[in-house]
Image 1 (spheres, one colour):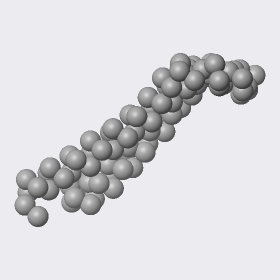
Image 2 (image 1 turned 180 degrees about the horizontal axis):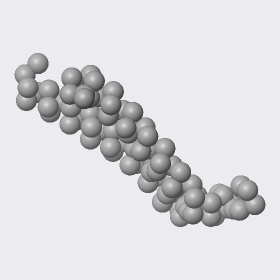
Image 3 (image 1 turned 90 degrees about the horizontal axis):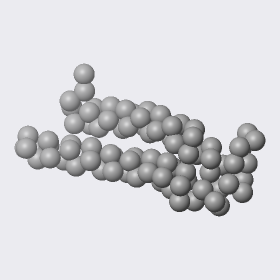
Image 4 (image 1 turned 135 degrees about the horizontal axis):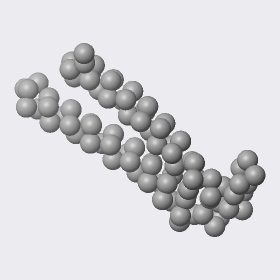
Length: 85
C-alpha cells in the first residue's frame, strides 16, 4: 500500500470512530438529558429522576467512557497501521 493511501485510510478510520463516538455522546447528553427527559423522568435512579440524572451526571460518565473507548480504538488502529510507539 502506498504511503498516501495508508495515511488516507488511517484518517478515514479515525474520523469514523470520532463520528460514531460523538454521536453516542450527543444521544446521551442532548437526547437523554433534554429531548427524552420527560419520558426518562418517569424512572428514578438513586432517588433522582433519570432525565435529570442524565443531564447532570450521566452525560459526564458517558463522556469518560467514550474517552477510554477512543484511546483503545486509536491504540489498536495505530498498531494496525504501524505507527504505534
